[in-house]
Length: 114
Length: 113
Image 1 (cartoon, helix red, strand yellow):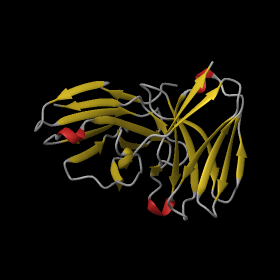
Image 2 (cartoon, each protein chain N blue to C red):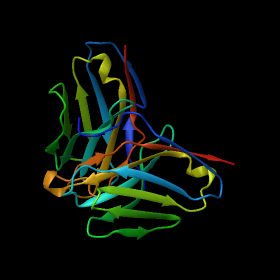
Image 3 (spheres, each protein chain N blue to C red):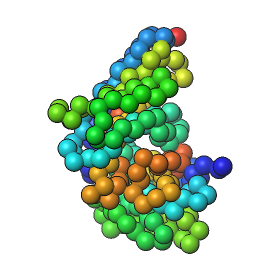
Image 4 (tube, rainbow over the protein chains, first blue to last red):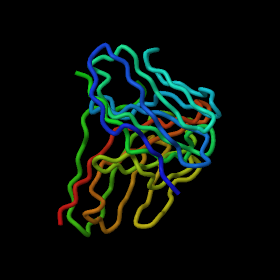
């Protein structure tokens, strides 16, 4: 069974640009959650999508958004990038709503904003 | 943000020794607690979880202890191996908050051969 796939693995963007990251969950999983990981703040919850609807949201500005498609693949978008958005963005898939104890993480996308 | 991830504590142990990694959690209403292992360049990997109504759970070479009185969680790794070297995170889940994972600060475990 294939794991959680995140693309791209690495990304370099310029301040002010926007970026879209992709996450393909484990086959059959309908929940995708996104997390931001930085050395200073650790792992922070961004949002969760289940059956194409956002079910939960963390404390991030509106520049951070996401969506989920009918095949459960999810994308997150960050607009007007700031230097502080440089981070490892992780997605986790789960078979049920709420990460629960069954969240499987991808390897992440390392975003660098210059 | 909701997680605490300031200075990363480190733990250095000799191969074959037992390791104990500690974590303080924030929400007394959390339903589950989980330990994750994160190796360099990889996402967090589930190790073991414990329901809030339990105080101990054992897995293969790992034991999680939960002390709700002081809101403390620990992970014990028996006979630590070089492959155990990684950053370990605890996380809590409160289903009345939608079931999202709230991560604690990580601890870097270094195993000396």
